[in-house]
Length: 114
Length: 110
Image 1 (cartoon, rainbow over the protein chains, first blue to last red):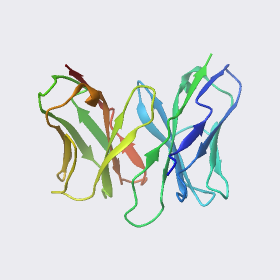
Image 2: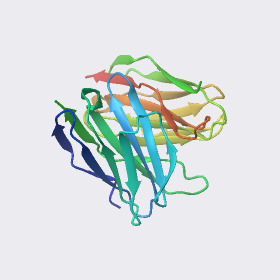
Image 3: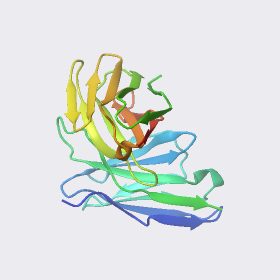
């Protein structure tokens, strides 16, 4: 079974630009979560989507947004990029149901903001 | 405030030298505790899920245990390929999302 895939793997942008990251979950998984990982803050939760609806949101500014499509694929958008947005962005998927709380992570997208 | 604390931050072991990593948590309504392994530049790789105090899970040289306030990841006779950052996360709390610790960076020297 194929794992979680994320594209692109690496991205370089300049301040003020916007960026869109993509995530394809494991087949059959309908919940997708996004995380930001930095050396100082570690892994921080951004948001979770299930059935095209945002179920939960972390403490990030409104510049960070996301969506999920009917095939469970998800995109994350960051507008007006800041230097501090440089990070590894991770997507995780899980099968939504009782006793199925384990999330499986993709390889991440490394975003560098210059 | 919901919180996950891992210790030590870094651990250097000789090959074959067994040790334990600690993950302590304060979270209301724990729904599960998770251990992941992360290699540099890669996404976290799932290791274990623990749901209730007293539960134990094993995989090769790794064994995870859970109490009401903390979890331990025991590494028996580690090998250099066990070198990685080990992350602990809990599910629960007021928001119901995964809360991660900062991780323990393990180095195993031959």
